[in-house]
Length: 138
Image (cartoon, rainbow, N blue to C red; front, side, top):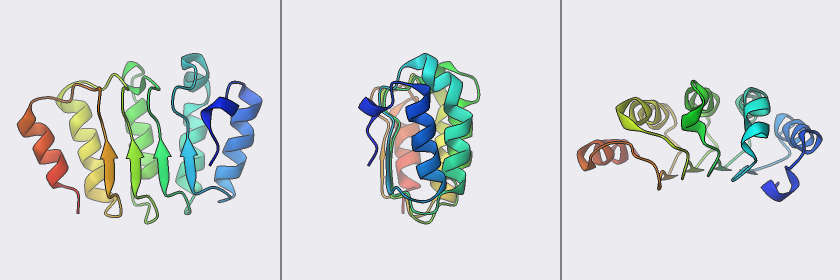
C-alpha cells in the first residue's frame, strides 16, 4: 500500500501512478492528500486506476471530490467494471445530493465485486436514498 503521507509532492504522486499503472499495488490510499495536489493529478490517477486490474482497496477519504465538477464521475468511470475492487472509501468528500448518490449508484451497478463502500461525512440525501444505494451492493 502506498500511503498519503508519502504523497505530499507531485513527484511522489507520479511514482505512485506508475506503480498503479504497472499493477504493482493492490491498495491505493490517497486520503487527505492536499487539495491543490488532488486537483492537479486527479485525472492521471483515474487513468492509472482504469488500467489497473489488481487494485482491491481504494481510500479516497477527504479529497473534497465534491468540490470539483466531474471529479466523482471520473473516479467512478475509472473504477467501473473492476473485478478486483472490493473496498472503497469516499468518506468526507463534500458529496451532496441525489446527483452524487446516482453517480455512486452507477459504480455499484457496474462493479459487482465491491463489498464495502464507505460514504460517511457526506450528504447524499435522505435515508431512503442511502438505503436504495446500499441495496445495490451484492
